[in-house]
Image (cartoon, rainbow, N blue to C red; front, side, top):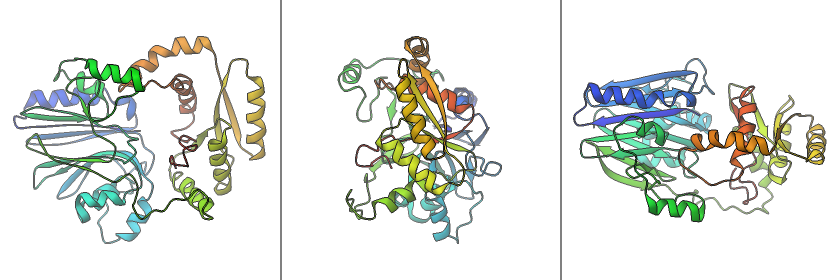
Length: 363
């Protein structure tokens, strides 16, 4: 993951710049590999990078004569976009630059052509406007706050609060909703004054004011999805293949269920080397570990098992709560957190079976 931060203000001054730098500093954990910024008379944008594609040439912001882009995401059909738009002057091999290409050619409608998970900000130098966008499934987060004279945005709520530009105040109604449905719906978060970009939402901001909001369709209307379709295998194989477009090693979070086993099988079909799998083993579940080893051995894959017990739960819970940012009451978060910490020692990218049981919507 990467992190993006920005401030646009009618009264942009040294204090605004320092506040933006402070916000960006709280996203260092999202982008340990590189950082960059763009600044003009009333706008400042920061990017914190976790390098996945184009390790040496894909720095952000990505800037040309008309636009500036900062993005957190993976564009899985980047190669296809580049091939179709070979006349476009790409400056990097970063998959995120496809976002800028499509916007320059088609405007907001161009984002419908993206396949991936993303949150981005584009600054239009000529028209002095900012365009924010988020993928249709809402995988990548993006939050914002605006007042009469200022518009600020960030990948994390905490970085906005720690800027000191807004007081921390909880919304009791949204807390009740969180406890009832285990997450918050819509644009409002549990923090008053901090709003989230909704899944598939595109915001256009001019002079610190939101002038338009568009929600992209969740799925292409031309897609006729049928789980019994004879082409389902080819669709899944292609999806898993493009999710592995990376210049760094990748692996798999593996539970042994239907979804992750299907992903492991497909990964084994398109990779010549063994897949590195990571699994959580709960206390007193030795039989589970044996079953996972049997499956991964069948696919000639490497399995790393991470033990998880009650002590782990209580010791990691404060860390998880601090990292949640926009709270979700998901009981699997704590073991998944430990799993990610261990996998991070070897990898930057993992595939998962998440969503596979919902008619493959996660893929």
